[in-house]
Image 1 (tube, rainbow, N blue to C red):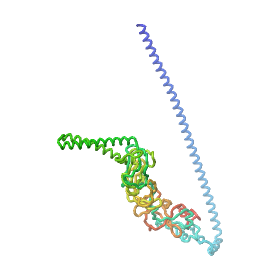
Image 2: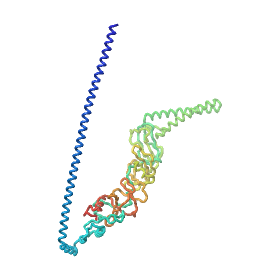
Image 3: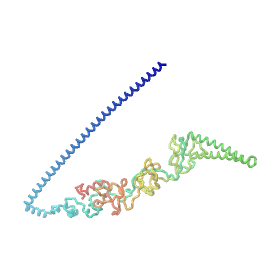
Length: 498
């Protein structure tokens, strides 16, 4: 016993020594890790300080270079001014020394008929607005371009001079004339529209479980009468439902016979009223079960009185009209709750248009709808107030009254948005910015006259402008207006727009 006790004590001492050794080892590891961390921080600090010194030195060098460049440019400017003053002094001395030689030359110039009128005037054509107006009235006798003479009068609509451009020149510059009021301009922006039959007068048939098409009798687009066979379908669930239907029919037939017999026995006084009520309620319960199964088959489009066909269950038309949706191929799988047959009672078409929410305020019921060729095809009947979160758009329904469209077609539809009164809508390539002015170019006999317009609203690919000051029958330039802008700013052919 004593030896065992001593052995346990030795074992405890050995474990204690091992724990102590582990603690010492962990302390050494912690000291080494802290030392390494301190070294890394020192290295980072030294590198950061070196980078800061490099940036400061680069900034000082750039400032010194800029100062040198500024000083050199100032010296160069002073030298140029000195040279210019010397040249002016020399020219004044030469003019004062030879006044007599100058007078005959002026007389010769005045008596000559071939010298331009601008050279007879000792004043510069750029001195006063009066001389500018004279040159503007006689553009053929001036070598300087005419300036804006109307700007001082405060008339912002006609402060620009007329730009004289021939029809061939305008065509060569890529400019075409369009009416200021044009349905093709105000028709709006294109949207993708899905053409479909009107849903208000149509009947659909679907299944509550997956089915497979095993036969086709009629195809989409054909006229159909009520009761005509469209296709045949089949599935395990449909077979089970048919078994339940036949079972319910048999049970209801038996229960109905029992109820009829009990009714006679009750009237004869053989059985009590309670016994007759029990048999009658049992027959009515089976009748409700049978009606439920028959209605489910009618929902599929299957006639419950004659459901079986050659290969499956017969799907018949529930009404007369045009078969707008129908299975296309045998073996096609139709998912549950998917309408696979739709019969439209009329040929009225509608367009389902997806409109971005950002411009949905411009589309209202009654807005006119145009085709891609600018032809009126119908009106917007309804506009959804709920935004589709998947594509951030709303759906507008347009009833199509004209045009040639096919069901299932995705066509480009143009919607005429609401437009404020007293405004015109112009395409974006008919307006150009010139400084602070928004300019359009009105067609004249000899070219175009620039007019400053007030933009009321900016839209996609078009602008709405104030119609004040316009008759409404004008034609405006559209296309490459940068050429006309260059002419009114004296940049272009011959340096002038005349």
